[in-house]
Image 1 (spheres, rainbow, N blue to C red):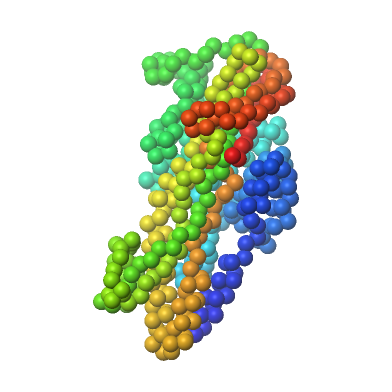
Image 2: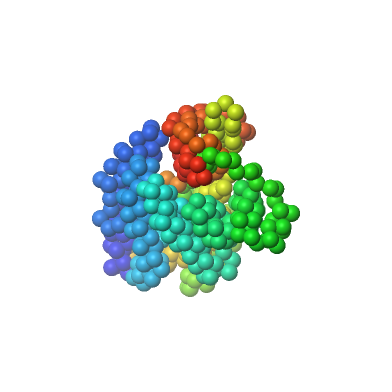
Length: 446
């Protein structure tokens, strides 16, 4: 027991060290200086590559137009996530007596999927479409892995990646792969719509009709024609702009303190057996005379934080205007993912808290001063695991516009939740080639 106390205090100083501050990154991004954010992250790299740092570095590098470096950061992140499925038993055991911050962080399912979106875009901007298609296939394999591992997999984030993959396969002339991806996207959007609030985008129906007609799948074409509207006719010397508009930030995880009463009548000998009783007392109030100990734990929490801009309208010339369609609500996915994980986190945190209480009780019986030290060690090492990929957008919208061959200026209008315009920005020199897709993503932070 005496040896354990210095260990707990040492862990406190270890977990208190952060290599970078999100406020510094966000400040640079929001003032239009992604290069400064990239330089800052490079200067504050941890001694050993880790997540979510690699995710942050990869996305910031993407916005700074360092596309190859961005993919390098994401590749390292991918290697780490794979390795962490074989976790260190020593680290796991340490986390049970200290803090969840010692647990290996592999990223959530939706974070891992979105890394493939940015990797693929990097390859598109590097004019390496084959590389982008490889990322689409990796994303598909990852979704299949999630499905195989968890019968209750809710497809959060899967629909957008399948949708995005269908677009890229179609752009590359991979018609069969495109059709498969669009079919998956339609199913995934439908499966998760109730929780994500994202309905199946209309352009998926257009694509299913377009591709089944092209491939000569008459029965499927008739079925889709009864389900979806006919797509607009393709015009000669026209190409297509596909704009992904990324708005705001995904809400971060924060720490909140919860109190759980241990009563004088409780028999606390086996922490694991006692935790279910404690869980039923969340939010309960007891008379002080009945209390033996008030157990304080630190839990992560996540709350909605919608950006000012939550929609986009794009005008080209004076006669064409298209409104963006929501294809990925990262906030909803993040909150629902956390809510699903919370019972497990609460159980593990309470198990750790009861263990610290038992250490305090044992120490206090031997010596009151030792008991105070044990209690102090338990308090200072009680920190919630709030790690997440914070630079991710809050929402992603898609704009698909057929445009004539040539160079165009896009007039972007940013909309609030009521559809009112609260900002605008012209974007010149967008090149459209006939019978080709021009990809572009745009980010705002308000």
